[in-house]
Amino acid sequence: MALTLDGTAGITFPSGSGTQAAQSKVLQVVSVPYSTSTSTTSTSFVNTGLSASITPLFSTSKVFIICSFMGYDAGGAGVNWYATIQRGSTNLGSATVGMATIYNSAGGVQGGYAISYLDAPATTSSTTYSFAYAKSGGTAYLNFNGETSSITLMEIAA
Image (cartoon, rainbow, N blue to C red; front, side, top):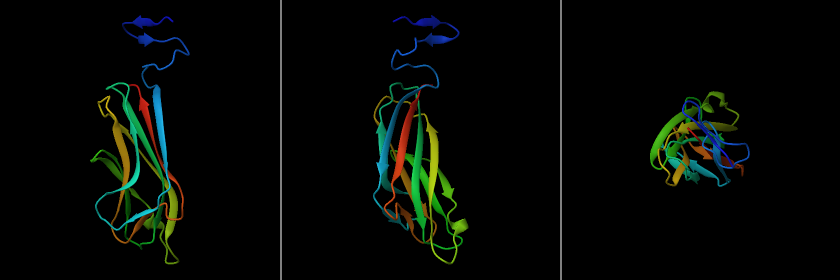
């Protein structure tokens, strides 16, 4: 098998040569389903148990995390359901899930949602990412009616 080393273009691998370090190439994918039902009334982020680990091949790699989840809000108007991705105990950023904005007096709101984050862990050690959530009032539920949520990790060569 031959490869080409060019000072301006980098390394070129022949097609079909296996794991490659070409920029922006997906090197590996880890996906974990999670069907346990959980709930919280906490205003601080609570880990749900939805997590996955990946061992990057290169310390320069990025990890793209996608959490797809089924949320239920039995709260009322003016309260929010928050979701975040964590690396270990580090919060990587959060998003407000707009369930409260579509709440009506007839009952709670349930739906499928997704959040994502592009991380640069700068390691070749096993790294765990998890999904956490919080509520500004009332109760937030994950997989309330037996649904399945998931977390997917993709290592991207950088």
